[in-house]
Picture 1 (cartoon, rainbow, N blue to C red):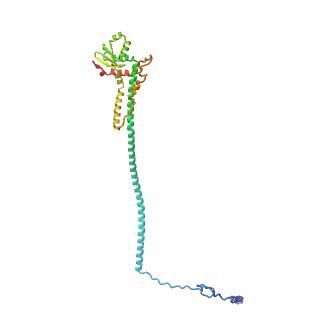
Picture 2: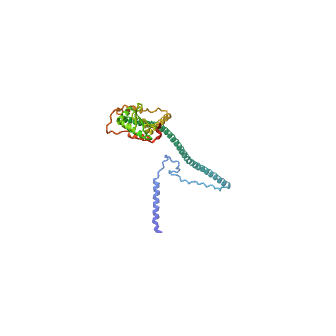
Picture 3: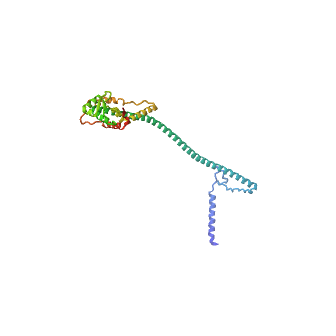
Length: 331
């Protein structure tokens, strides 16, 4: 017990000191200072209040009717909520499906409609272009036919002009015509009468002597109605027409027929189009040809080495005349 005595004495002294100190340092509180409402003691400290705990009311278990009512309310609430959510989901799904289906149907309808409208527009444009092409094509076709007709006409006129010029500048061609005409007779008959243009008659008498004419029994006659290069040979049984125009027609028969066909086609096209004909520039070609000094130089002597320019057409005409026995006129 002795060892604990010092500690007890120390605690007693400390408590004595604290008590003295508390009593010596205490001051009277200032009563003028506003005391907060929540302070209720003299030292300005909050009063320790012990919370009042209310005893919980006794909870009674729900009755069967209450449970059934709660279940019914929950069921109704769940049904309403599910119905609303289902309606909203179905409405949204239907709207999206309708938009998709409507977009697809509208796209197909618009595509088909646009295709049909495009086809109709294209056909309309094709018809318009065909109409324009026909408007340009028909006059051009008419112009082509008229130009071709004029070229054929020009060819015929040039051929006749060149032949006429050759006959005038080389009158000795009449001798070839005379021999071909005599050889064209069906039989080598005697007593042949040959009618010639006066100039050709004079030339033939100069080239054939009287003995030769008598030996061949050729009787020459001058016929002013004939043209240069014309020759008509007659015998007791037959007659040969060797006029220059007849021989030219035989050679140019195909061209002349083509020229006539073109004329008919041009007239039909003019009546169809109701347009005026193209100016015929070829009508004055013959006058221009005859106005040329070179073509009208009928009396110009030919050079010794100049070759006949129309030998082949005359020979062709003669061959055609010989081959055709029906063209020979019987006396």
